[in-house]
Amino acid sequence: MAQVTDECGAVAIESLRRIAVWGTDRLAKALSLMVGRPVGVLPPRVAFVPLRSISDIAGGPESAALGSYLSVSGDLTGHVILLIPVDSARALADLVMGNPAGTTTGLDEMALSALSEVANITGSSFLNAIADSANLVVLPSPPCLAMDMTAALLSSVLSGLYTESDEAIIIETRFIETEREARGFFFLALDADSLDRLVQVLRAGV
Image: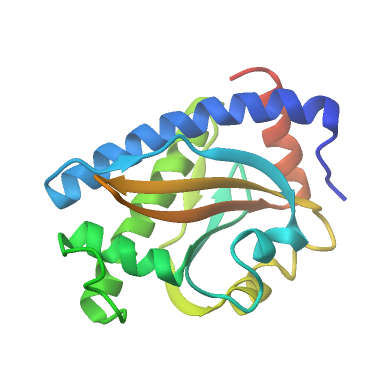
C-alpha cells in the first residue's frame, strides 16, 4: 500500500505547499471575477493525511456537509473531494451571492448553483496548479454535488482506495471578504501508483 514516509514527505509537502499557494492565487482571481468584487483566499494548510481520518478532519463523520466529487484520470488516477461544512456552505453562498451575512439559512436551488460553481472553480484551480507545476496530464470529470453527512459523502468514493493507498492530500482553504469567512477542505485521493508518481515529482522540488 502506498504511504508517504517522513523523509520524503517533508520535501513533498514543501513543494506541494508552493503549488497550493499558486492554486490559491488562481482561485482568488477566478472567484473575484465570478462575483465582480474582491474575494480573498487565505494561504492554505497542506498535509498528507490518512484516508480514514478525512471525515474527522472535515468536522466528524456525522456532521452535515456539502460535498463536490469528481474523478481524475490521465497521468494521475483517483478522486477529488471538496467538503464544505454546512455552516461554511451557507456563509460562502452569502459571500458569492453578495448577501448580508446570515441571509442564507437553507441551501435552495440558487445557493446550490452558486456553490457548485465555487466547487468547480476550486477543484480546477488546485488540479491545474498541480498538473502544470508537475508537468502532468490531469483530466477531471464533471463535478457532482450532494448534501449529506460527511461519512456518507466519502464512503462510496474512498471505499475502493482503502486496500491500495493509505493517504490523501488535504488542502484546507478559507474564503474571506471583509470580516466574513468560510472554509472548505480539498482532498486529492489517488491510487497507489499515482500517489507514488506525484510524490516522486514533488520530491524533485517542482
